[in-house]
Length: 250
Image 1: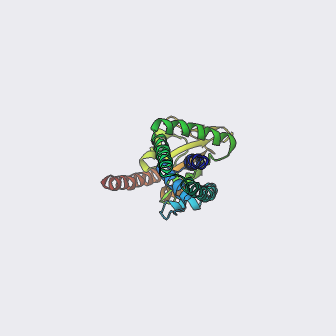
Image 2: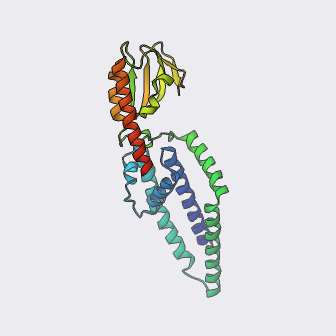
Image 3: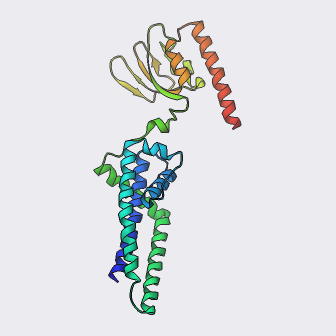
């Protein structure tokens, strides 16, 4: 009976460890489905050769999580197999049937608990709170989240006196039509305007934090005030409209 209880405890701990690993991976920026898959793959030791796994092994924090899951998984499966052998090694047919029934019942209960949405939300909140308190895992992989390897970029643009952006409100510049989002503005005197809105004025010596197509972000700091700058803006808007039309057709 002790071996049977040990087996169920090991299986329960395995489920909890995989859940902790998946929540930790989500906290580094992975989607929930992908994080669960990678955590289960690492813990079970079956390997994961998907394209998404490259984003795991290249990320140092995720690599540590996966390595720990592999180590714990190897130890867990070995102990579980040993417990299973000890459970069914000896005893009468009636005893073996009883033990088998307990194993099946325990697995069914664990399956119900592990697939419960209510339990999932509860465990996720508890695990996330614990990881935030005792670890530094809240490290987002912003390069992946913002698709920075697929033609998009984040750039700082310092505003000069002859720049097309200077002394205009964001609503007047219509940068969103070019696919550019202004994430923040650092004023010359040091204060920071996060998530600026349309009436925010861009002034001399401001530094803009922008996200958008890499090509346009490279050209934007060199766009001069006047009709020439307006023409370049109109050309960039036309290109972006073509991109949106192509994306809408996909």
